[in-house]
Amino acid sequence: MSKIAPCLWFATEAEEAARFYAGLIPDSRIDQVQRAPADSPGGQAGTVLVVGFTLGGTRFTALNGGVGAEFSHAISFQIDCADQAEVDRLWDGLSAGGKTEQCGWLRDRYGISWQIVPTALPKLLADPDPAKAKRVMEAMLGMTRIDIAGLERAWRGA
Image (cartoon, rainbow, N blue to C red; front, side, top):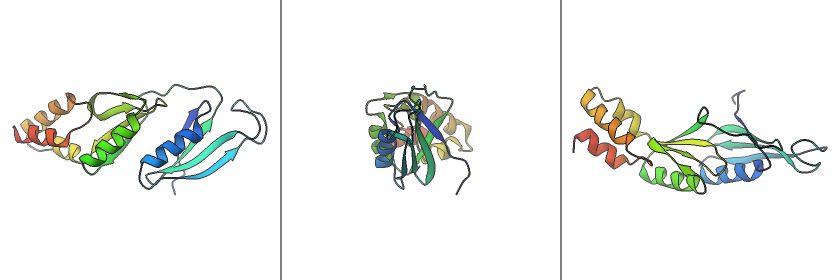
C-alpha cells in the first residue's frame, strides 16, 4: 500500500462525501470512520472527524475541519473509463448537484474537480499522424462530456 494518500478537507460532509464516492466508483469502500474524542474545530466530541476510504483501489482520507475549504482545479482526480457507458455513468453521478465543464472536467456537489477520461482519448491524441491528432484535439475542445464516437469520427476525418 502506498504511503501517500490524498486528504480531502470538508466542513462537516466528510462521511457523506466518502459514501457518495464509494457508491459510484468500482473497487471502493469505506474503511474506517473515526469520531472525535473531544471537541475540536471539526465538531463536538462524538461527531465524525476522519473517514478513511478507498476509491478505485486508492486510499483516501476525508477530514471534517469545521470550516469549509475551497477546492480548485490545481488538484483534480482523473478517472480512466473503458467505454462510453462508464463515462456516462460516472459523469451523471459525479456531476449531479455540481457543475459540468469543458473537455471532460466537472466539479461535483462538494466542489472537487474530476476528469472523466475514456481510455480511447489519449490513444487518439497520440496518433502519429498530426492531422488526425489535431482533429481529435479540436473535437475534444468542443465537448463537455467526452463522446468517444465523436472523437473517433474526428480521428477518421468524418
